[in-house]
Amino acid sequence: MTDPQPDPNAVAPTVKDLETIVSLSKRRGFVFPSSEIYGGINAVWDYGPLGVELKNNVKRAWWRAMVQERDEIVGLDSGILMHPQIWVTSGHVAEFNDPMIECATCKRRYRVDEFAGTEDLGPKDLLDPETVARLGLVCPNDGGPLGAPRRFNLMLKTFLGPVEEEAAVVYLRPETAQGIYVNYRNVRDTARKKVPFGIAQIGKAFRNEISPGNFVFRMREFEQMEMQYFVRPETAADTFEGWLPRRKAWYEAYGVAPERLRFREHRPDELAHYAKKAVDVEYRFPFGWKELEGIHNRGDWDLGRHSKESGENLEYFDQATGEHFIPWIVETSAGADRAAFTFLIDAYREEEVRGEKRVVLGFHPDLAPYKVAVLPLLKKRPEIVELCHRIKDDLKRHTMAVYDDTAAIGKLYRRQDEIGTPWCVTVDVDSLDDGNVTVRDRDAMMQERISADQVTRYITDRLDAARPHGL
Ligand code: ATP
Image (cartoon, rainbow, N blue to C red; front, side, top):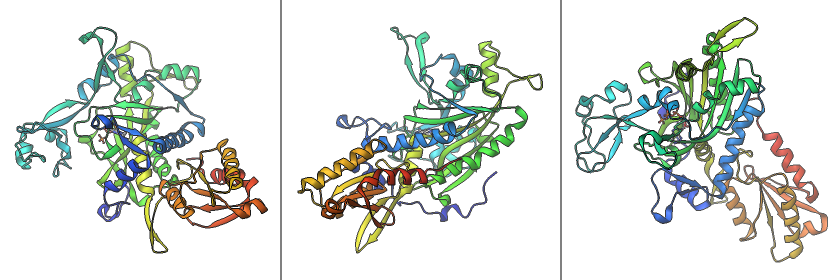
């Protein structure tokens, strides 16, 4: 099922070039290249002071919608390292690979499916040596000839224990889902859950991507936010359809423009080894429509395989009907980094205000790294500075607030606009007489005078009112 869509090419991204976002991220402390003083390491990125706040807020918003506000979904935090047999059983050792080609001259390697003209090819064609000649593919780096495609397994390996031998190989998990499947019985029994119920997990995953890139879109170390929903087999198809609008609505509720989101269903020859049906939520990135989140009907593949290979009974007993069955699984699998990146890009806007360019990150208040900046109109007046700190310290008991006096007020406002702070509180000379301060709204740029004593209440009320519920 694909949503009725307008011409996808007609939907413009918020920024034409990714560079605008990459440089803002670096300049303001959202994202830094990892290991930069050593020249960096490909496809690993570090989150700076603002980035870590944004990503934590994204993860909290997801957890709130998936666990906190739902009775039938509980959380889990399983290990990154697991018994290596899990990845054999799950099919990842045999199947988790991308078709890769290598340039005969410069030796660079590429994913076949990232070349123009391969969009509609299935896995067989992507691995067919004829495809390279038929499409006239050459190395994008030096124009050299490309070899025959072959499979490249994406899992990263390491050794557990003091001996580096084959028997000690373990994998860094390429998805968080398997940790949920192997804990399914523990959670079911301890949380006393009856189907349908779900288990949610946020955590690191690792993939040795062949051609990473587009900033934090495709990394080798990243975080996933996955939820596995265990259902009766005959209800899986409906459950799947139910999660699609809910997951799209989550991105919209936190500010992503609906016209830059769409569903895309996987063709049968494109389906992952475990999937019966798969639909991606896609976003219109500056580099095209790309997957933001995958929603999969995994059938009984996972629990069936784990049950067989481990010899443990993972069947569910339905007391009401007296039936035993392996639950089917509907999964929603999102990337925390990709979601944070999307919220960051989609929030970006440039405006002209009184003849000057204003850059704004129009974050949903719940996602904004700082909720409030407290600013003095005159930093030379100690009473003003002291009142600023008093207001800021009180706010900090509830939320992220910051004090800044390193520029004139106009510049301080612009700085906060550029990092998406929804409110600024300004203390001036009059505040010392009447006890009132100015609250400025980032988007409307309206200013309101309120009592200094009421600032914390005002901000926490606004945050509460803005927070989406029941997603
Ligand atoms: P792609 O087709 O882009 O390689 P995928 O189909 O392999 O992605 P899934 O296995 O469905 O992706 O992973 C679920 C989610 O995890 C993705 O929708 C994405 O948000 C996130 N994700 C996957 N791989 C990466 C990566 N290399 N870097 C950042 N996030 C990722």
